[in-house]
Image 1: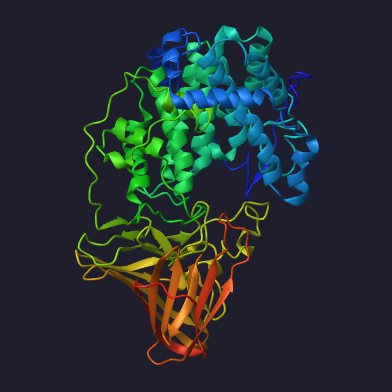
Image 2 (image 1 turned 90 degrees about the vertical axis):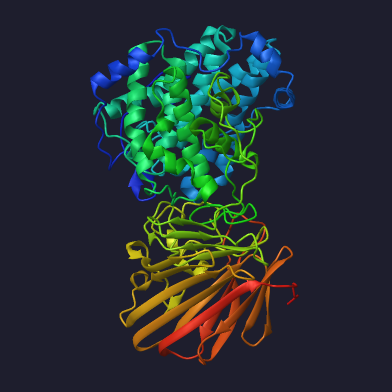
Length: 639
């Protein structure tokens, strides 16, 4: 849809994301008119400024003295000497032909990121030097056939102008351009202002309004419960708040966001667990927080989405899920080294007045993130309520138990001799960004995850298709869970780690899971995994699997690491990574076993590939008990 050239519109239809169509399963209901009228009464008749405009020189001259803004200015100066990366149609078609996402996304990200850099630089300098480059960029972006990602347009209906969907990419571009137009105001030529308005209306605002009013099939994310909901709603709403003059029109988009963002919050368990993983919490809840901040600002504090009861527990997920040493679980599609976004954590603390320790905070930085993030966080209203007095670095609780999700984080007592912490996972195999990983666990010593869940793979067409679990980091082969009668775990909500028993004391935490439903093995009669985390003396994890069959079958368990391992002596393994090590004492009640390792040859988001260490019973069994006692190693032995 090259509106820059033709001014044409597109018709509705359907594209695919994973097993869902962008326009398929959702049923949308428009927000009540009475609510729209209530919100309209909260808004300024002319749109209130969402952030200091470029014309407000006192603010920008002050910001210009900060290093992060000077660095953005320097980056923009370099862009003036660099041609805009070309994004030919052939590059968009690469995904539909090869399944590779990275080549197009790398170029697209480079082009789209220029919006923030050029706009902030112009606001800092205010000499008009960056406006021609910005106008050229606007024309280039508006000349693209679609702002939808190729991975979300497999049938190429958006690319061929057969329909107009809203996805993560198109809502992002629309918000960036609308906010740029808002900040720069009359400094932009009328042609550029009109081009932005025409395109964001046709590509995002009009399709969204038609979806909500039932005039076209809504995209699935409107009633979806994962990060797509909050990300797309934030992009659409930011666009409307920055672009639309009419108060009633702005109120319509805010009311729709208020109504449909509740679906995103329903994607968390009641105790705030994010099954998508910490990385998608940064992304999804981060956009929810940005949405809430700009709506709060536009309504002068009278509508606060962050103050909802349903938002309070999800808001604290990032801080509650830490294991020890600044290490967090890489469950689901989450890279191994992911941390909570400190700027988001700081904003949540200030807004909800949580009084977190100073170590949990990060200062907004104009160099980081999108223009929308800078507007929401770095250019936040200075009159916003400040946080309650921040506490000193506090001793973390001994455990975090997400009962509704079946996830337990165990931490050592301050007096424990060994700094060993663990994350233990039940749950089910139909979670957001699911891995087949019931019974998975992570062991951290010091600040290093030594025994791991390997996290996510580099996304390709396979990742979100019927072949997702061909991947040996997404299926259960890549996780430290049993293989039963040669069978891996199967996907689906029926594969569930049923909690049989828990016990929590200062000295010991126990979690017992029934894993039978995850394995389609007719002879399997019992499969229980007991985690016992002991804090006394040297902290350790004792993991016991009990299995029973109707007839003899094979059975094995596994460990996964990005490090190295060796067999110190029969029945004792040592696993080491980055100078930290654990000893794993094996006990099988006399049953003979063998230990074998294999590199998991998948494209992971780490410099090294993970190794799977399999502990296999040598003979088929009718019943077995296999115990692993995992303790910090005093010294690291080389294999």
